[in-house]
Length: 327
Ligand code: UT7
Image 1 (cartoon, helix red, strand yellow):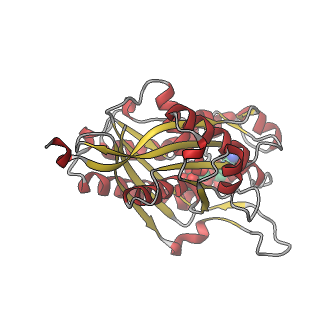
Image 2: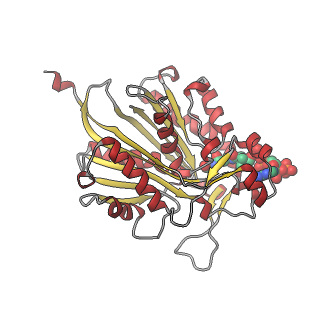
Image 3: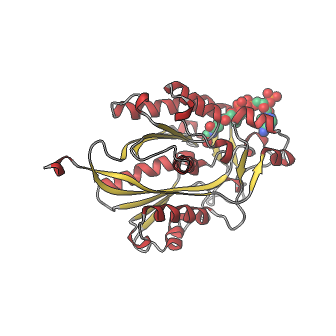
């Protein structure tokens, strides 16, 4: 019987995005700090970023992105099993942003929690959701990356404040019985190296009194590690699935710097048309960057059902990871 050969997989059934209305171009940034459009474009590929208005918090934007993903999938909020929010910029230390979003969506039966893995948070979230779905704990998980880095940027530091933006992206994963060549998450690979914790961090938290709370990055150091670590994560995903780069329809990388994105694409030998780039429009939105890039590729018709997508990210921790997904 054909049923014998069906596999239980976490399948992407909906995707949503939310970007704040306010857009700041590089020229706008040059009015605030000593920088230029030329420098930012040449070193990073960034042309503009969205900055949140006061009401656009991680919970607000995450709920909007989540609602759009649920609507696309046609899943009623009360049927949702769980919500995972990857964020470094939660509205509050607690309740978790995920629980605020649970209330906003009316997802009465869902449990929820936040996950802290900086820019890799969405990939970490996919991995946790995949395990929960395959274990049968729940049948649907909303994974949201939502960030308001504009609130933790140090506008006295031109080497970091021009690099980041705000936004949220969400995917709904649901358990489905599929054939081997069918859709779903095929693998996730997660990594961390805490000995590199001081090259990218936020210098405060709610547990510390009277401390400023700003992002600090030794960009050159992070850059030095990024391409090799990301290529390693991507190669591990390919090896585990007995695939080669030629099998990948689209690389959906973390959007930190165009030069890092191109570096990974080049190592894999992928032509530009098979690499998704949104860093020009969104800048680095940390945990929101991969789902925002994926949502944009889907909206533009570049990412289609049946295609094989390789997602990757690296961020503070250092943490990094990859996920192989068939749409
Ligand atoms: O999402 C988490 C992961 N994060 C990343 O992957 C970021 C990784 N790092 C990077 O993307 C890059 O290292 C940066 C974009 C942060 C910096 O690019 P870079 O090519 O490594 O520049 P640099 O730090 O070596 O700086 C080059 C020059 C310096 O001037 P001098 O010392 O050569 O005279 C900087 O002072 O550029 C200067 N500079 C700026 N100039 C104009 C630094 N920031 C700016 C700026 N505008 N905003």
